[in-house]
Picture (tube, one colour):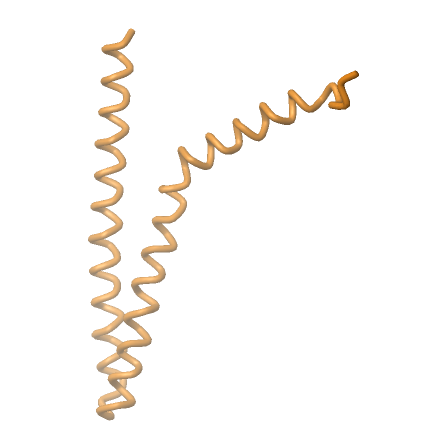
Length: 97
């Protein structure tokens, strides 16, 4: 006798679908975290510079600005790369059909 429940096949399908969704959309979900992390890291670096040299709030402003610019550059490069990959995938799917 088979000890598996009748719904185990359905549950396995759902797991595979969810995993596929995470693989597909996961890179997009991390973009916001990367942007926020860049800004926060450079803010605290600027805070350290402010405390070390006594130039508050210039270090925080410069650090936050650098974090924003660097974060947005990385954000837009990542998005452009993802869009290009998606176009390539669509073109290869069209060729196969």
